[in-house]
Image (cartoon, rainbow, N blue to C red; front, side):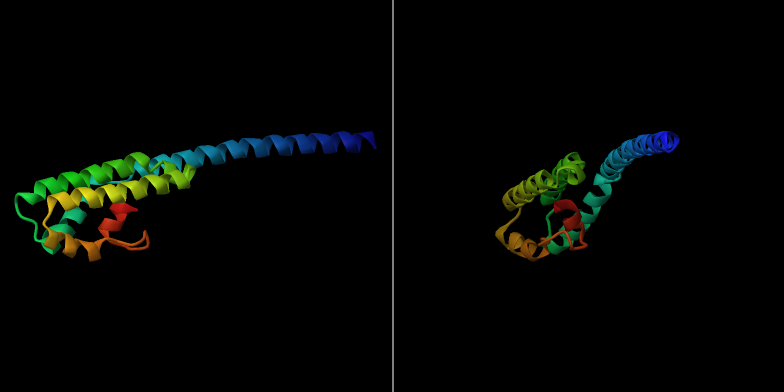
Length: 139
């Protein structure tokens, strides 16, 4: 009877130790995936896509293009810096991205004409479900 109890205790201890080790591996894998998502967020590519959408739709002038491009890059770099919190603190990520969206709207309003802003409004995504480059930037 004592042998069965000792064997059971050893098996339980081994199982517990192995489980604790795999929890550490899961944590490492999650952290690696989060940092990989942030590093795979290609600011230049998304910026080109956004500008490719905005330039013809808003009929940006040659004088407006560099300023709008600069704003787009600023917003994308902000997103890249807060992207790692998406998995670890979703509420904080959502809060920061909401502020970033509002900042984008306020800043671009100063760079473009009222008619261009009217043309921009329907292009802005309402949620992350949209598959446009603007959604990649703003959500």
